[in-house]
Length: 30
Image 1 (cartoon, rainbow, N blue to C red):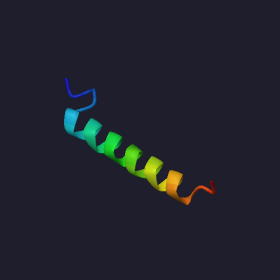
Image 2 (image 1 turned 90 degrees about the horizontal axis):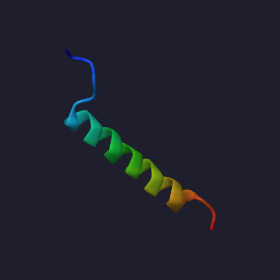
Image 3 (image 1 turned 45 degrees about the vertical axis):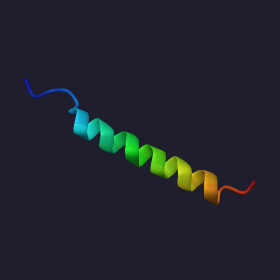
Image 4 (image 1 turned 90 degrees about the vertical axis):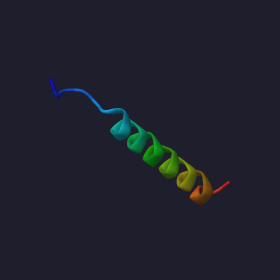
């Protein structure tokens, strides 16, 4: 019992992913 991802951790991962994606879109040459 302890295996699995907690909702909070999942939210952190998703938030981090969105942040990285946004930064990549901004830095990426159009």
